[in-house]
Length: 239
Ligand SMILES: [Fe+2]
Image (cartoon, helix red, strand yellow):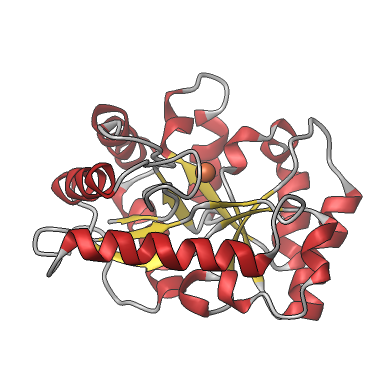
């Protein structure tokens, strides 16, 4: 399984504070069955330059690496960020280093709004067309307007992918819609959005079994297969 959204890197955002906490979170996720974990610290382009963020991230990765040794018993990790969508991002000419593994996929957090926003749609379109980046919309379950299929579809049609948090499946009124999206193949990634240890193991396991039960194991496998493709690996659920 792949956890696509976490705040495990130490001392860089409101997630893990120390490498000890980071190590514990990675170990817990591995025990839950996650073979691969994407590290996605918050990046706010209106508060910090990409250069500053990348330097801080480099130091956090180094700290973690020093603490995890040969990484025995830990999941594979991939370095990315959770970029808050803002016009300030366009002050940068090259944003590929913000993408997962320096590739094309960028976990992108939309501004907190209740309604569909043409401004946000135009901004992600600019990322796609002018920067050759594929925005993976973070925790779409948090946005009421994206729970309307026609709104989500406009973002998908523009070339975005969609990530859902496991916590969505314990929310009445949201889980049904997200399960439908999974059945329809709209979702490319699932994430724990873990910020601290211990990770919410019970909630994560309950969500996974709910998806299996309601949408079917094949649909859950399809989500992990999509995530694996983004990460350039061939692993999928149960392997
Ligand atoms: Fe997050």
